[in-house]
Amino acid sequence: MCCFNLTYMQGNLGFMFSVNESLAFTHVDTNPLQLQNFKPVASSEGVWCFTYGSNMMVVLWNPSIKRSVGIFVPSFLNQPDSPKMLIGFGIRPDTLDPTILKINYPYYGQGPWYVSVYTLSTRRWNNLENDRLPRETIRIKRSGSFLADEYRILCAWVLEFDGGIVSSCTVIFAIPFPIENVVKLIGFTKDEEPIVECNSNQHSANSLQVYDKTTQQFQNMGIEANGGSFFIGPYKESLILLDQPNNTYVL
Image (cartoon, one colour):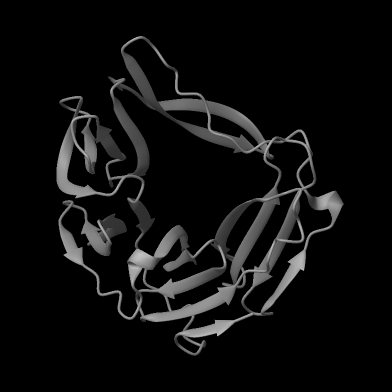
């Protein structure tokens, strides 16, 4: 049984594999998409979202039915005070409508935010009003890494909510690793063991590794790839995009 799909880059080539509960890999045919030209953003309800170029286009692809749709992203050249951009993606659970979020924000915290939402059903970008945007005190940045002299710590928590308020916070794991390694959490196995992308100063490529709770060691899965290119999306078969013409590009 497939648990998740995995994409990564090796040199100038892009690959996708389905991974089962035993962590065995099966190649996924992505034709006609050339994955080396796309950057994964997210997956939802079996649909993958990629960006192409400098965020000039978003491509939605359902590997279950081999159907894709390209969506042009509005230019942000008219927003010089907010030049940084983030793209988000999800499927609305009530309507199963693919939805894209575009956020433009300033470099150094001073300046306005611009947020636009695109839904495939309307084929239209809508700008959110100011009262629905994040406060200017909110910033998007990397979190701290619990640095020590020789080790860093990879941590994860489970949050429980009651009426929209966090009622409890439970630590799943806190894993120390040598400071000379760079570890990035990208997913979990069915047993909730963390899957990480690991870089060692001794190797030019990054490796995919799983943390074994029993031995308390990282186990190499035997795949090396370009740094920062590993991405995991939950596996789910769906018919979303079936009503869309294949390989189409819309505004």
